[in-house]
Image 1: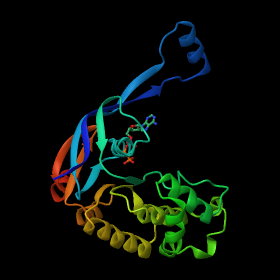
Image 2: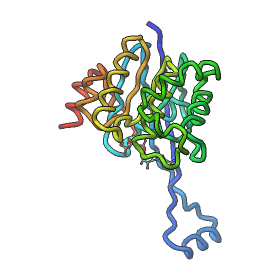
Image 3: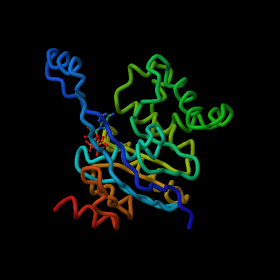
Image 4: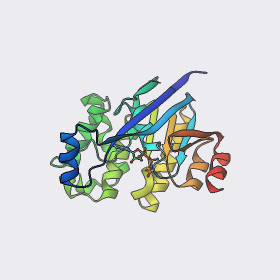
Amino acid sequence: MTTSIEIAGVGKDFRLNHSRSLKDMVVSKVRKRDRHETFQALDDVSVQVQQGESVALLGLNGSGKSTLLKLISGVMRPDRGSIRVRGRLAGLIEVGAGFHPDLTGRENVFLNGAILGMDEATIRRRFDDIVAFSEIEKFIDTEVKFYSSGMFLRLAFSVCVYTEPEVFLVDEILAVGDEPFQQKCLARIREIQDEGRTLVIVSHDLDMVQKICERGVVLERGHVVYDGESAGAVQQLRR
Ligand SMILES: Nc1ncnc2c1ncn2[C@@H]1O[C@H](COP(=O)(O)OP(=O)(O)OP(=O)(O)O)[C@@H](O)[C@H]1O
């Protein structure tokens, strides 16, 4: 078996600001007192994902799921430990983050396709399929700043799946999509799984993740508190 994602002893800290007033800020500046508190969003997290596995990252609000996904994707670096990913990776993490508001849908497909590692000829070849999947043909030459959040999601998801990544990371993908589009995304995700690609999903939709993923990892205040069958992970959360 080939390891697709190796997370070893990972920690991530954030600095929290604690100034209540301008006076506070001045006083602490003068006294050279640090107004910052360090907050451990992730601590000593180790998870190995094998190629072809589908893993759900679960946990309450603020438990560290999105942070871990961002570390895997490489948009953020860990403060401790290491993360290794084998194979081409595409993430649907902050939907629309890679989209430029002043460019049209069409231009953004090319921009995002390139960011995700597709060359221009490949994007041209897949362009019609990408747009057809998103079902926003009518608006493809509209600047994306006029898109609704669902339209953003549709185009971002389409570009992402058509780059055919070996490792696919998804954060709350389906939250803003309507029911028919959700079903379509789920069907596409199943194809991705059948092709033996690796999938890591963050979601609060426990019934959905239980259907998609065989394995669940539960985070609690930045620690892994469960790693096993997704049914067990869901049970742990619903206790
Ligand atoms: N850039 C940042 N700066 C400071 N704190 C951050 C930053 N990103 C995340 N955090 C903090 O880290 C903790 C974990 O956040 P994260 O978004 O990973 O949680 P989550 O499990 O995805 O939550 P949710 O279910 O609400 O999406 C939170 O307390 C959050 O406030």
